Every structure is written in C-alpha cells, then in structure tokens.
Image (cartoon, rainbow, N blue to C red; front, side, top):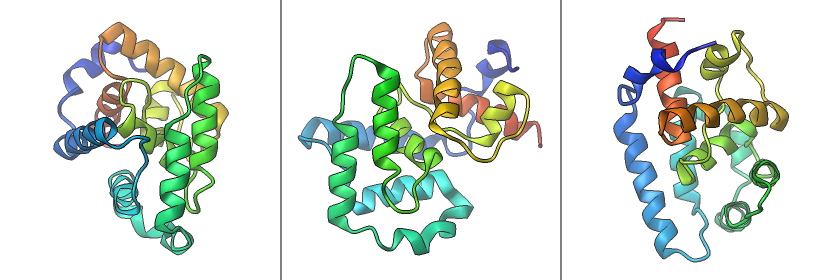
Length: 178
C-alpha cells in the first residue's frame, strides 16, 4: 500500500493539473450562481473528456441517447442530495448519475470529484493498484465506498482535498511506468 510520504511530492505534478483546477473553479463558481445546481450537456461532456481522455469515444454511441434535459434533470437530482450518512449520500449520487447512459461508477465518481473535490475522488485502476496492491478494472459502489474511506483518511492526515490525494496517487502510479 502506498504511503503518505510517497505521494506528498506529487500533489501538484499531474500532467492535467491546470485543466483540473480550471474545471473545479468553473463548477465551484457555477454552484454559487446556479440554484439549484445542475450540469448542462456541454459541462457534463467536459467532465467526460477530462475523465476518459483517449477512451472518450468508447461509450459515445450509448451516450447519444442523453439529451440536454436528461443531463440537467439527472445531474440536478444527484448533485442536490444531502444526507447526514455520507456513505448513503454517495451511494444515492452514484446510483442516480449511473442512470445516465454510458455512465458507470468511474465516470459518476469523476463528476463528484470535480463538483465536490473536498469529499470525493475519481475511482481509477491506477489509484486502486497503489492503495490495494492489485489491479482492478471494473468498480462497484461497494468498491468505491472502500476506496473512498482510505482516500478520505489520507486527506484528513495530509490536510488536502480528497480529489488532490487521488490525483497525487494517480500521478505517482503513472510515474512508476506501469
């Protein structure tokens, strides 16, 4: 399992750091002005491009069924749910976002990580491998809950947002050349 000392130097060395910061700022500003908050189709698509990178085209056929109204309605519901039980809140949000065609736990987690970076991270095989010691390519809500618990613990110890812990571990793994 990766240690805190191994990731400290990778906090700001991700290749997509500028894009990530820009997207987080954009969504933070929109959350202040758009009440209730939701994502437009193009904003949602920006997140997909950020998360999927070279695999963006993979689910494009399935995603064509998603309309502006569907994206606004579903993201509006998911992003405005709050509950004192944070695991339950996360599960509801992931379940709702996963109802969008072409969206599973990893993409839903990316939406949450950019909208609520203090609380969520993107689930990814690279970080999973560093945290749990083995590679995994598909993820369930149960996996995300277990993953998020560890990253939130790291976040608390480091004093960083959960999303930045995730990004540092992702960068560490990428630098290992695996």
